[in-house]
Length: 464
Image 1 (cartoon, one colour):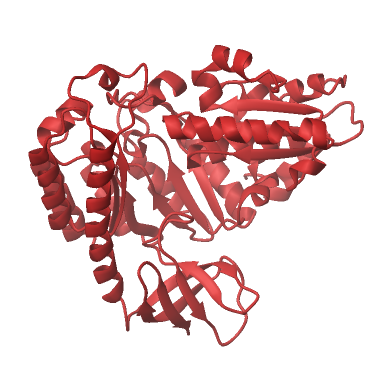
Image 2 (tube, helix red, strand yellow):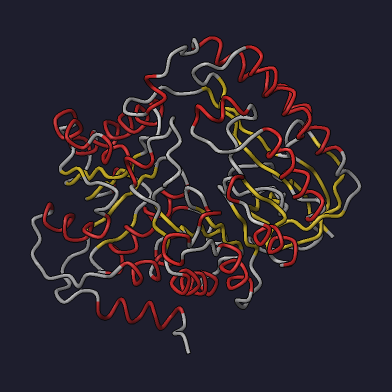
């Protein structure tokens, strides 16, 4: 029998530290994607499992500040640098003794960062999270032997840290790391390395512990979730993983993010369609619709293939919400290419859509391609697509008026108004539903809501 959540936590607390001394306050700020969020939860869980560290939400009260950076594009790198310098001020203005920088930016620019950010006491990379406890204690001048948690154990202790970062009813599960897709615009393979899946039994065990700790929604994330298992099992096994998780007690919502369309299999589609607690929602970043642009991006899809997949998803999973991201201004994108993308977006009518201007990143093949597009053209094209998508989104939202929809509660305001999401909306990403209820409910509860209105983005309703 698997151990209960409490048994797991008590065992870790009892065995993790052989020399318990004074405790130190730690503040951890996370930048970037959901994969980074999971890394932060694992790092903090390692720290808390030793009983030597206490999480705080105010950096002015922290002995140790950790900045988990993002370095995917220039704007993310700049935000990371700005945040590091902001946190460094607490070393002189408050009680902070140690500033640790980790994550994608520090992995990508590790040597440069050491010289450029002397305020940091150490620079760690994405593969160094297992050393966070010993590094922090050494920088604090503390001695003691700390039992090292292996990767499986540290994942099981995540429940110790999750409420520090977000509402405890939503848990992101990183099912793999790295990427083998070799898109010409992307820095992830050089930062995170090759695609590396976690073993299915470890993921399911982690999900079980997170459900026991209160998670009502499990969000599966990776650089490309659809490729899960190919490296260790020889075949994609995401559909099997979803079926295994769906059988766990509690019937949590299961949400699939970041599945590249080129790798979505019939088995994945069938699993989403057949499993009642798998959200009828899929995030599939297509980046572009025009075949010649996709080729320069290093993507294997085609315009016709994408439209065929969209039709298949909607036919086999009625009511599915499709989310995607588009990139405009990729090198060589012509006026005709953009017009094709605009017409494709009008035809596809995605439920959720993000548009980003291409960012020229050093070290990527796309950075040296000819016919780089001017920034003002990129932004004009992005704005045109977003105006189109806003119209599509509003039409789709207004079509939900008078429907009764299941909504998971994410927040309860002091006014008594409840804020939640349908299964068609990802936490902190997509639209919300604002509604009133006749009797008090709790965060994580699922309630039927009669939709009474829609504004530019969100829905309004009355709970049953």
